Image (cartoon, rainbow, N blue to C red; front, side, top):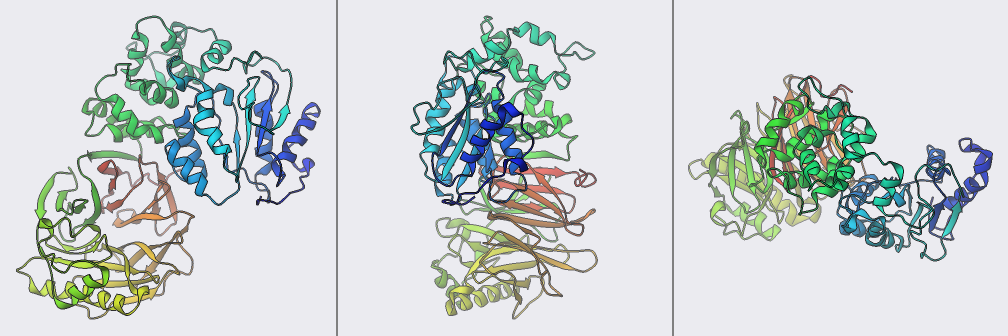
Length: 627
């Protein structure tokens, strides 16, 4: 649906609707398909009147139907402003964002957006004396600002409450009386506490009694009924036992894995509640992803374990066995490292070259994350390199990289070996990093920098925009430019000119390559248009992208593994995709934050640099693409 366009709906093509609901369904559908008129539709009615079912009916009818798109559906039961923002951000394709960042993104979104919000009157979580426990807080902090945006429309279920009643000119679909499912009591009282009191009078003790036990008498949360997992923390908060019930749940790692992630998030946000170890910090790191829809307990354990690694060793060790059953699990974490670029070191097994945001370059042991050395070679300053530097606005006087972090800020690397590399500076300068005692390498890498520096001076379309490396048997540098051309250089032997091909229609944003056991050299590059392309350098590039999305690629890495070549692609919406290159199978790894840089080893260790530091994840290649 586009702004200003009216779609004439055919209600008979929607799923069947009970006769007593057809008038309300017709009204809701007319509102949804209208190009003009109220931007808010309130779906009202008492408990059991069918409000949520009516919204589900509308959504089901839009599947595969051109002209009407529901961009997000956010069931709000138990959500706070923050957890609502995370879920809406995921569904709109931004990834989980804070409420303020979400509002900025929606404001900048050019699409005419249609949202469905079931169960707003059931929103809220956490201690009853905090604002987060009331749905009115979500309305004031997020929904009202969203509804102020002229390109956003929303159908919101409010039960018998007065939520959003002051929003002038709203369409109202009223389903009247119902069967008493606990939607509300018609009095206008709509707080979270009154809601959970009305749906059940079951005490915390009774809920605990409904949880099966292990052979040694501990609660087996993996077998607990879903309603118990959803409500037991709320019941614990209402229990008059000086907080003992809440502390007991928070100290039980099994409950952390299986309990309601939204309830845990709201409860742990209350600084008054004591928690074991550094749980509050760990949960804060994992919560944006944990509150997504994850039904696999091993995956939830893997996410929580990833957040606990190097932060809460006790919790991490408890979670390790369950996390290890998943197809990925964290091996180590270095939250103290803020890394902007990564590259595997050719010819040195288990070594990683990493550039910190301060400009310091170091080598690290891939298996442990321990630093194995600080690299401090010189930047070559041959005349060609100086020209390249001037073309990019970088001082040619930077001769000792580690001594001048204010001058050089690497954003990508292509390693030749443990002592030399090409780097792409934050100001788009392509620079060689070499030792003083290796003039041959200095000349070869200087030639690459000179070639691209001269080309950039001749035309802006040749300005370097991406650099990647790869190749275990023979190292390569993959250079991408603003015009979409990809240039392949051998770092193992001198080349006067690269092998080049215009692979993209827009600037190249990321690059990597892998040499396979059967002698193929596969380059993977990403364009500003959201395309990822494959080029086997002895032939022409593939005519269609490996992948095309509406988001920006933030990092690429590839390796030839025992399962065959694998490509890792990180996206600006926070998704991390793992491709089995020859079969085209893909798996999404739900990482905790957006990725800034990646490195992948042949044995399936994925190293991730993100705003939270540096981490290594073990991929189980034998089961990775089993669905």
